[in-house]
Length: 348
Image (cartoon, rainbow, N blue to C red; front, top):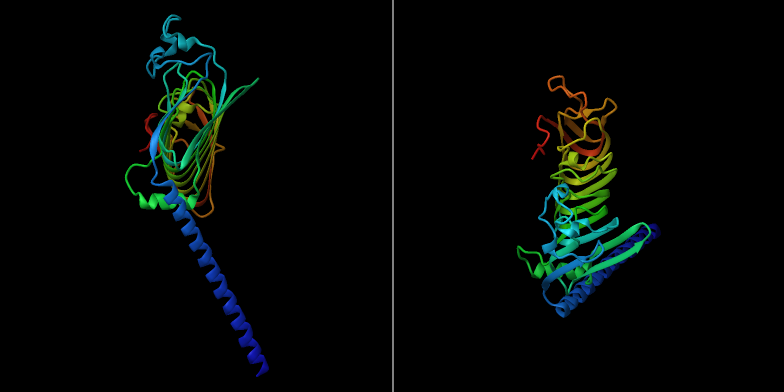
């Protein structure tokens, strides 16, 4: 009888403890909701205002009238045409961090500066620009930083549902400036076009949303290294051949992703590409004109691989074709490998 009473006493104590913990959690959540609601009332609806920013990368600021149209072949310009193209520029380390919105990163006209256009909610975010310079060149940081708490921003979003996000920014990068580029684009929609730029290094982290990263034309010079990450969303990378990168690392997870190796691979070049994929579907499109090295491999822990990675006798590879050392590792998900006869096809 004593043991039974002791058991009931312990059970009652545990029940009371669990109930108290639940009440505490509910109380804290309630306080957070009330606090966030009061903060939202103080800030008001997200107010989208224009953003216009120019970051000089040459000897002096450049007027748009002094720059040739985008896509102009600089080699065709005489020294007297568009003097801004012939200015002295230093290498730039460019760090871009944008979140919760619709964003574009695009090439600007030759001879231009780094510019930012668009709109953002100034009562919920702050667009911060910071620049330093040393013997190695300039370092520029662009950061769209939230000034309100995450919970407050959630409430503001729930009470103002519409098709247009208050944060809509475009960053233009001059193609004739050596750029060490770091991108962090989070929560939203992003379109990144890097074709024609002069990149010395590329690191991109795209997460939680719909994102497109492309190289529609070859870079000004071969890229020694690039590291890309796409997590939690719908991601597309196209024209990787136009990056002409020697070392490529791509991480994907929790979503639907497509990677296209289409583009202008330099003859007789060798590149190494490592893909780490988990939790989702990955489609890899490889032009048949590229030689896949014999040491390439695909390993799957939980999931499956369809298609072929290696060369086919049906589609002979030219003797001077680019060689790709490709390693794909899948921890949980499916990989579909396609070989395209067209060097420019991105596989959709």
